[in-house]
Amino acid sequence: MAVTTQKSTEYTNSTADPITTQARPDEMHGRLRIMFFTHDQDGAGDATSSVALGKLPAGRVRVLTSLSRVYCNWTTSSATLDLGFDAYTNADGTAVTADPDGLIDGLSVDTVGYFTLEGALAGLKATGGTYTFDSKDGVVIRATSQDTAIASGDDLVGYLIYVID
Image (cartoon, rainbow, N blue to C red; front, side, top):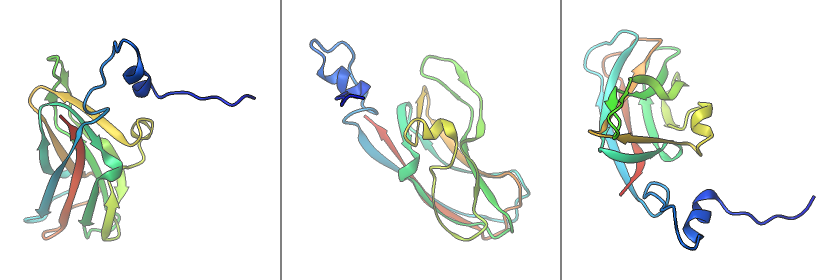
């Protein structure tokens, strides 16, 4: 074996002479933004009930799931939380179908408390705990209780951190 000194793809691009590939703001020097949300369930909701948490802006947005957190007080036994998004249109005009668990699939929220929204999806882990949207009109982020009912008065409070600009 030999000692190696290498560069990330983004650093390689930024140090090329001449620069032929400009880094996008969500990759380098972008601005962090916060989408804060509070939800108090009004009336009971059966399994597969959902909550629209907010809408990300149009354009290229990188959600940093590992920095995003939620306080969840879903009191039904064995509750799990899925985090996904509604259907939207990509910036290039192609339709993207809704994916109710595109960000998190089955986060156990059986015990009331604070949770990171990183989840365990291999695709997100492989991108450093991030998910990139490139939408024409923005993207609605949605939390869903796939398995159990949401009781009246259950709470979901937190924030998504994302990079844009």
